[in-house]
Image 1 (tube, rainbow, N blue to C red):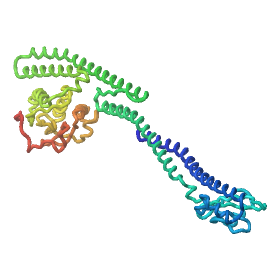
Image 2: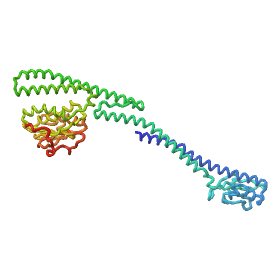
Image 3: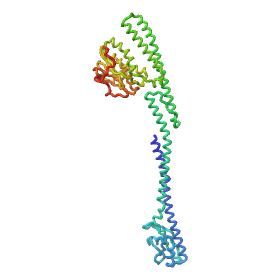
Image 4: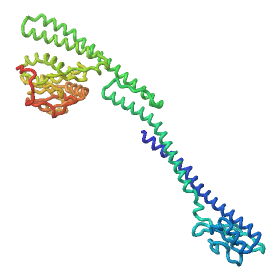
Length: 441
């Protein structure tokens, strides 16, 4: 936009400058020509006075030499039936033509032009006074004037373009800030705002953008509050379930049921707390992946023991902080682990690897034939909606990473949440694993 405004100013100013300066250049050249002709006219008028006093060729020779043009060899007097006095530049035909017209004429010569002034002498005959005007005299000062006009044109065009650039830069800055805020909002940052600036139209657009961002944030907070209310409703059936569990006789089954109820209660509390957090609070939240993974493995370990699934955890010797709310990270971990339990036969082993580069879940199941379809809602097949892996992909993008689906070291599917620092080549292999938890077969 800024370059377009500069080109527009350049084009308009150039046309205006040409419209004025071209005629001025022509007038300047004409003025120099008229000045040279006027000087020649004065030289010829001086010789008319000399002819009126005496027509003697000897006296005329001295009169010719006393003038500036005569001393420079540019003046001559053509008398009837007498050789010309002075230096002749015009042809005899031009002289005869001037004498016949009995009015001043100009004639082209090899080095310029000749000003021919006829005058009547005493016997009624016509004498012609010739003054040669060199081409240099007709062009004296023209080039200097043209250079001055060209410099003035450059100053005018450059100055107008600079002013247009300064005026356009304000519009461009405002537009760029608005576009940057829009891109920031598009990435999910609902705190993006833009300071209204620039022309009235851009000022209104900036205010409308700020209002839109505020409305989006308010709507999302309302949706999260609704989700928290829905989660809160689950407490009623959970309470009834807990009462039934408490009524069970002591034993391993009853103990596992009580632990499951406790974990489910904690999970609901975490969901409610996370859902009711405002967008601003969630955007500034940072969660340790290793801590969340340990908590969720404690939940899924109960089901793995019931289904006799061997499982192993690799890594986790140091924290892996992610700029993701805890509730979202819990959803991602549960989706990765729940995908194993939902799509592999009971007794199939799985392995979890956590590092600063990725969170990888490998299983010994049949694998995923179409990874692209697995992250499309309603398209993953096998009775799945595809929502789980879609959630993982969304959270991976929010953390600055991506979702990777392939074949793992156990021969089945490998689903990995690759973090910002990792690539597909960074995913662990069996040979370089360091066991964090013993085999729970």
